[in-house]
Length: 427
Image 1 (cartoon, rainbow, N blue to C red):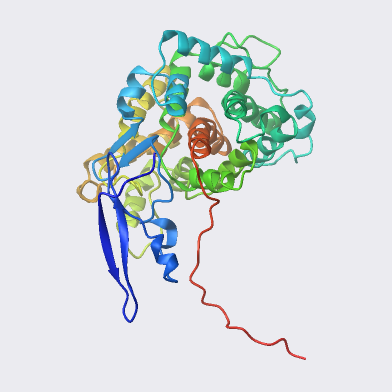
Image 2 (cartoon, one colour; image 1 turned 180 degrees about the vertical axis):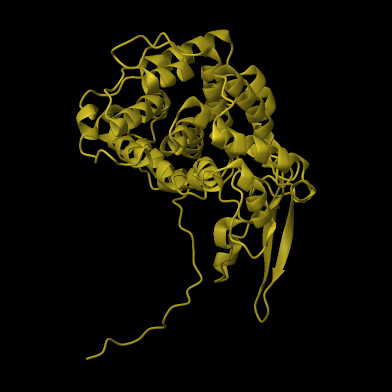
């Protein structure tokens, strides 16, 4: 259904025309001004970083950073984290509504049937150096899926898109675990379809063929929450990369690989990895005050990672859930002497009580707590962003599918050119 403007803005261009710009209202959030009529008057808008630009219309996720609100299809993230599961949230993001009991069972069974990857993909891994970063491996093998699954590449076919969605959601934990196993020289573990999504991932990560591996209920629940809390976050850099890549008609596996590449950046998906690097830099509890003072010094480049959020100006609604989960994991594992976790817990107390952090709303965010949980589980920092990618896959697919379910244009941002004017080649 075409959008209908609620009102209009009038832009007066000096020594030029007056342009009427339609204003559209969503169900929540700010109104948006449609600036496309400017192109007819030989003008473009200039918005580095797209901080004030809506590039699409979407009904999937809503964020109010000022109020600390995150809604998936209208459901608050706190309620989903408490009552739902990752796969049920996947169904919600993809279909717009929560599943009934039969739909949930069918959805979960279909995901389980797609967990294995083509056997020839095993040899694909040997092309990487032994010390390759798991994100480098994941980006490559996900893109390569298009060479194996030719029956789900027609992006205009709704059934093909659905098959691709199931394959990606199901196979990402398998590929992620294989990336880890390859990096440490251990044999790949085949998925077990009698385990749930998070249990299966932990089994493939930490199991081995020599002995039985029992997955802890507390740890699998924590991993499921990590996946769920990272499932989608509106039009972030990686989701925008998926949409932009998809707007060219690229196959779904290439689009998700583009999202993984964007997520790998330290300013995006590498935040929880940066938390652990910061804790390692601090090194000892005795140095915490020194680094806190540095963080308060405007002239010192040091930053405390995992505190505050670019979008959430109040608090990160996901962080409360992650804090509770972190406490449960640390209790389950009986960890009290790990020096880095001691530093983390001390920093948490400071951030929640120190007037400087409270005034500036620099609360611990989801990356801070997820970093603590993954560290406690024994997962290396190089895998942190990989796990983020596993959880975010459904969000990427949901946005990609939403774009293909309605008319869209190929993405083509404009620029403000500041280079040389035309000049002749010297003879």
